[in-house]
Image 1 (cartoon, rainbow, N blue to C red):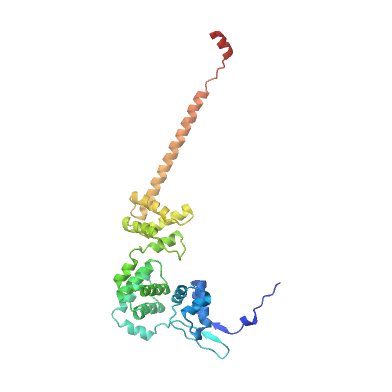
Image 2: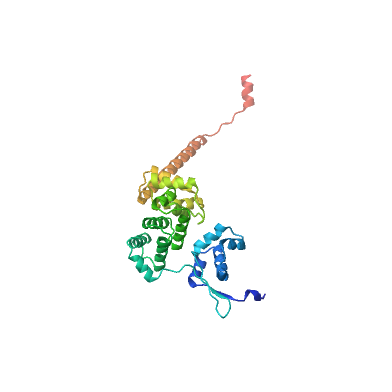
Length: 317
């Protein structure tokens, strides 16, 4: 059996990866995010810059910034042990219980946390409270903007608070600091857009084009459909075509709208009517085929006659 051995240069030193970071690596991080995280662990004491990381991996600076936002890197703490160059890395610290208690005394914070629990449909965890306080305290989002951010992200199926923080950072970089500015930034994209993309099986990183947004806006605004009906149309689209197609889903939803479908139960009635119509058409076609066959058979019942055309011509002449 072939033997595999690590070169001695690859067996020196060690990196201690926190359990939470390892779980995040395994479940959520992509290749570039994992590579940058390990690079930061290795070079924690050297304080690398965005440009130096980009040069090292031949990434764009935007790629590096996105990875840093994923890890929420705002500072790194590192230390070496006596056993070698063992580096511990940490991102921003969570808010302490004492600090959270002080924030809870502020009038805006309790309503924000209550709204978060309503959107999530469950009690929020301490690290999620820290995320909300980070957005409120450090990004300086007012309470109404934080609530809108939560509503926008969760309705677009972004329930991970790291993802919510990333969206908040993007809004901050775009100059969004008020509720009106956030609404202006997001109003052209229906909140159901991401759910539609997921239901049709589009890749997670694919962004919708304007025509697709227009279709979803038509379904939600003109037709008044929610994701219960839209999701059913998407499922039937994938089942029928084997691929994501917003145009095909639109043909289904347009048919339902023309048939006065208002709620999911109405779809069953439309399906039943469609099946009855198909059975009637098939029965009618079968009867026509049988009728033609019988008509052809009637002519075939007569005995064919044979004529001596040469003899007939002689008689005529």
